[in-house]
Image (cartoon, rainbow, N blue to C red; front, side):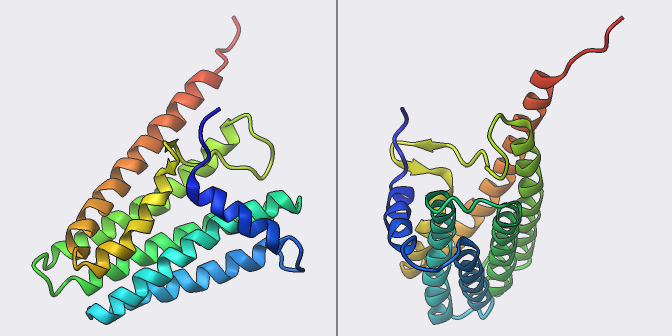
Length: 208
């Protein structure tokens, strides 16, 4: 059995405690969306202090996004609305992040390329979300469950976004942004490949 990512383990611990309250998973999702949009918006200011604060808020938002899913599982509150709300939250969060960082770094050495990278990252996040929804439908998982991200050695692919905080604080946001935008495009293409393979595996040729 593959190792459960560390972030999801921590999210599970918090979810167990939240399960004893009246807090609904969708409430956690809504809070994570607010933090993500606020954090992303701060990057657009182009100031170091704003980027530093925004990075911390965005990391907190993405961690809470893992907590809501674990809370839904613990309390048996998986719903169709929650499933799509979680996807919409992820799309809005990453779209805003790429767009706002691009705006904030337009005055850096990247110049107009910051807009290009931001647009590519934002577009890839949107397309990848739609592809993942279709991939979920092609999987053998139950209703309102998602395939998730690949993981290795206790770390999931989505955990890479947690690095944005220390990297921003160290002043390395620009190279990280370029790599993240490139990675978003690659991930989108990889997800498309997975979906096409799933379609091929489930294809039943017509009879004679």
